[in-house]
Length: 91
Image (cartoon, rainbow, N blue to C red; front, top):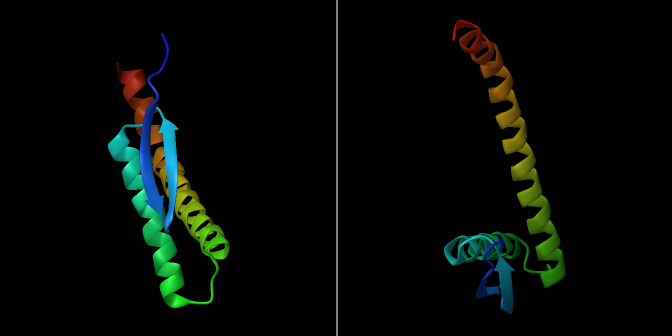
């Protein structure tokens, strides 16, 4: 069974892109809007940034957010592991 591929046209920081993927159109639009917002925030603080610089800094900021969330997730999983093992033994 093949996975459905959705397409959506989006604008990010004045440039237009056609996104294709298995995510819903709404999800892809939301991601594009998120990246656009990040780039606008960065250039609002430093008007000398080029589009490329804004894109790279936005990518770094988003990667940092992801890394922190992954670490938080891993910590929560570690905290729950003893409970999960105990629950399995009692089943």
